Picture: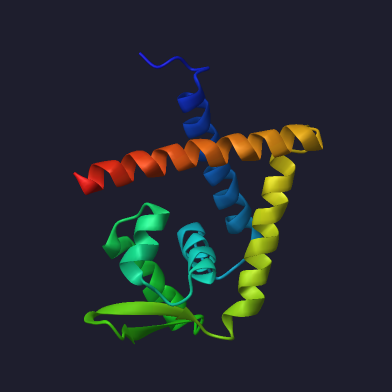
Length: 150
């Protein structure tokens, strides 16, 4: 049994609570986007030009779910699907200039949430947490890469 105060449990529970709070804030912000579409816009903004399936993988959603998010973003004129020059079956997703103001607002909302999450921590505690999470992430990426190589 996993203990509720174990590192793994705390990381998973914190991520769930963060996502729930982000979804509430997006819903209350009055955007034309659902929380999932807002998350997709953030991820596309960070990876503009990536393949649709790569963005879905980074978000932890099914490709069909990602396709629906991109359909909506595309209908709003925020993103565009372009043929991948190296694979004619694949599509790369790029931001359109119209997306920049909305993306900036969503990023501001996300940054405010992150700031609110650590408001009771001293700067050195924030830095230690950040470094510890990077180390854990790196270990997990290494484990995944090791399995993929087998």
